[in-house]
Length: 386
Image (cartoon, rainbow, N blue to C red; front, top):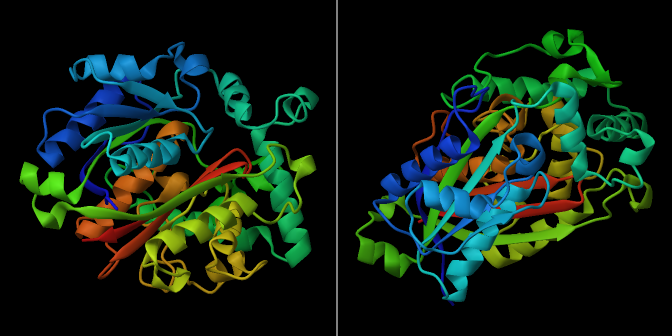
C-alpha cells in the first residue's frame, strides 16, 4: 500500500488582514509550502473553505487560487465540510496520493471573514447548523454551543471557571506562536469577567472571527526521495478518518457525546496502529471551550464527563500528559474556519519536525481533530515523525 508524507508546510499570520484579499492569503501560504518542500509544480490543488461566497462573494476557489499561484492547467477544487473544511481538504489530498492518481498534491485552507459586518458574520457562520430546524427559529451558532455548554455543566457539575481553563491554556501556548492572533497570556479572571455572548458562553470562551491561510504539500516517500527532500522534513500521515452525526441538535442521540469524533478517532487509531496513550499532543477543535472538553472525551483521552477534569488537574499543558492546543488552538491562534484544519496540520508538522515555537519534548505522534457544525462533520488525522 502506498504511503503519504507531508514534505512542505506554510501559513500566514492569523488576524484582521484589511490589506490582503482571500486570494492573496491563499497564495502566500501555498507558495511558502511549495518553497518549504522545494517544488515548483504540483499535480492538483485542494482548497479547504467554508463560506467564501457570502463573506467575499467569491466561489470557484480552486481555479482562482491555482491560477493566481501560477500552477498551470491542473485540476483544482474547493472542499466544503463547514468548519471542518480544512481537515477534509487535507484528507482528500492524502487520498489522492494514496490512490496513485496523483504524486504531488497541494492543499490550502483559507478564509477571509473580517470584511463582513459582525452581524453578517454571525449569520454566515450559522450556515454550519441546520437552516430549517435551527436557524429559521433564531438560533445562532453561538447559542447552540451555549446550550451544549449549559447542559455539560449541569450534568457533570462543572463551573464556568473549570471550562475557562481551556482558554487560559490556549492563550499561554498562543503567546509563543508568532502566527497567532492573540499573543498574550490570560488568567481565569479574564475569561470570567468577559461579557456573555450567549449565557453561559462568554467572549473569552469563543474563538475569534479572523482571516488566514495555511498550506501543505503531500506526496509519497518514493517521490519525496526523487525530489531530494531531506527525510527530517517528512511527516507521515499515519491514520485518518471522518464521520458525520445529525446536523441538528434536536435529533442527536446524546448532546454530550461527539459521536462523529468517536467513530472517526477509532478508525484513525486503527489505521495508524496506535492508541490514545501513544499520542504526544492533540490539536483539538476548541471553537468554544466546551468543545475542547467534549473532544478529549470523544478521542478516548478522558472518560465521558471528565474532559474538563483534565484541564482542572493541569493535564493539558505542554509539559503534561495530554498537551493540547500547542500553538494556541482556535481560541488564541484564531479560527479562520475553512483554514483551521490545515493550520492544525501545519502545526502538527512543525511539532514532529522539532520546529515548533512551543515544542512538545520528543514528539513522535500527533493528532488533529477538526469539527464542522456542532459536531455534525468531524475529521481526525494522525501524523507520525519519520
